[in-house]
Length: 228
Ligand code: ADP
Ligand code: ADP
Image (cartoon, rainbow, N blue to C red; front, side, top):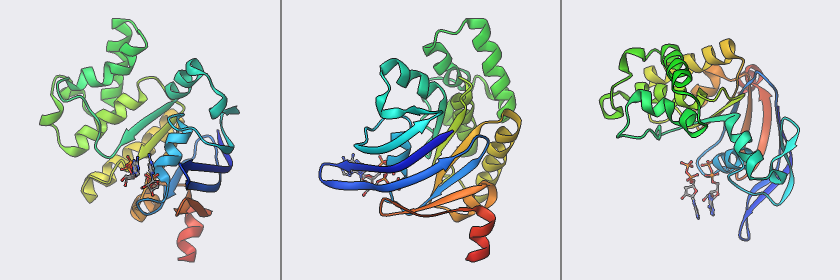
């Protein structure tokens, strides 16, 4: 699904990613763990075409990301849903409108939008909050709205960038359980970027450990916890 080979990334003269190799297979819940500054967000931005990279290869379903034109980048992003630490919801819009946003951008019909958004709100357990504004929701509910929005265009991959870092432990558990459910039911590959070992332990099948722009190791999660 995603294959990264010998990827190097610089900001000016500073090398941010160093010889990164990583292969993420379809259906996996793949963790990328490391301290702040390890290069995790930069790597995600390379995957979704927000950042250029100088050398090495990064392919999504066989397509080299740096070679894509604008139109192909739009298609790529359609296939990569994203969620973030601080949810990035539009505060003036309702829950329904937030989830509908990507569908409106791609000019789906009103009927189709209604159907898809309500299915997604059912999936994340927030159908009864369709007319609420984000400020009236808890952190966990906001992240559920963000997850529904990220799934609106039926992506093949969901990228989660510190998605539970602003949540308390119980809410974190329930959001991770939801992600696991989505992975199983919808057969979506999930990439989980985090600095929290607990997150990896709860849901990841495989994990890459990053430090200083390098991948230190990639292991099946079970093996990682046997060795440590
Ligand atoms: P992480 O997501 O693991 O916290 P980042 O990918 O955000 O790490 O950052 C990796 C390194 O790249 C950090 O040292 C950070 O300061 C640096 N960095 C990130 N973005 C930029 C940028 N736009 N210009 C220069 N340096 C950057
Ligand atoms: P996050 O890691 O929360 O996803 P960012 O990716 O935006 O946040 O930034 C990560 C780190 O990179 C931050 O610590 C920030 O200070 C640093 N950074 C971002 N942009 C730049 C930049 N233009 N120059 C230097 N450092 C940067």
